[in-house]
Length: 345
Image (cartoon, rainbow, N blue to C red; front, side, top):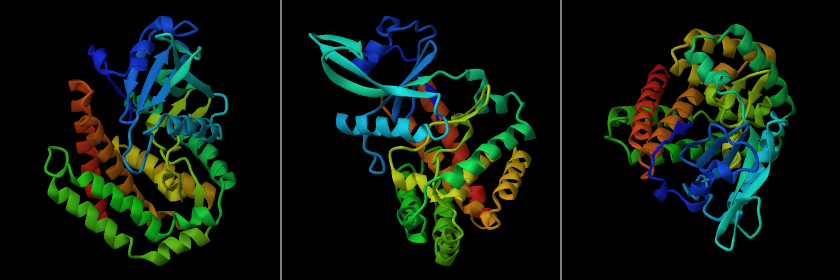
């Protein structure tokens, strides 16, 4: 979820962020310089480049609390995303300070580390294409044609299998529910919604044999982890980017967990027919006959995660009123969708 933050209260932002909001800070033309914030990142659109920096957050499931950790996870982000986008993820960068002066990749001690990426055309982001009504079967075919070989060559093994058991999956699901519970009663999440989602998830996780069957079928892989339309660009080719780098247990998963995210996203846009087409094509191309046994469960989980992220973003002190309102609206949508999956069972 990438949300604009055009607040003029730059004094509340970290020093390095204020520095990078000046076009003169870059060693290249930085036309249309724009800051985007997520709940965990500062993202600068600067000319033909994108610079992404991690916020010093510790949510338990994610720990960017020290400069050393942020550097490590920047390096991981480059390595892991080059699996699908080797030409988009360029290099590690730093904002340094010497004699009171800040510079990008300059002299002095590093204040912060980030990554540099090629800027992709905004109008060709998949979520924009969806909103324009231009998503087609052919586009979904192209995504499937990339995903199937990606999962076939993705790493697997005992460590990954161990994170795909019912017990391991329950850690993620119950943690997400626990982190959402603090918001129960707000406009975006009612007690009835929360209870319906939680009861469904807990009951589904009791079928431990089903999770073991998925592992035995070779469906436990080092996946993308964040496969939704805002992380796909339909430019000169299909680019699937911004995978999960900060926690292996969110990326080591059943492939159904990955594709369920994109299917859920399409459902959220009201494109249930295209969502069904995508799953049918993926199932056919991958030979994954057991996919639908777990699809609804993972859709519900993914919708709940997105709802929680919306609430976390809405409750950050530094976001502006427009971002807060947008985040709450998105959270409301996602929790209602999760409840719908829970009721379908």
